[in-house]
Image (cartoon, rainbow, N blue to C red; front, top):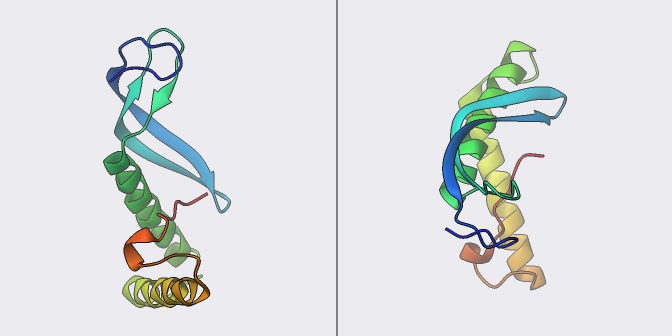
Length: 109
């Protein structure tokens, strides 16, 4: 893979991902990304983004349960999935997206 900024060949490296999310510092160890040795630009593949999102969600659920914000993780996930499906259907009705597959990937920030 070539760097879109300087044109050099990017190297696949393993690095931890750290990010504050909803007041918690979330760390996902050993994610694979492409990094340019020349300019330092980084590219995160889509499968890695999905992995980060899944791990981040798991860690947030555990922390919320530990702090007493939710009782049952499975019930909470079911409600979130129902809400997401309803949001997508409403966006289709409003004409913002044409079909389910066009719905944007949500990323925890």
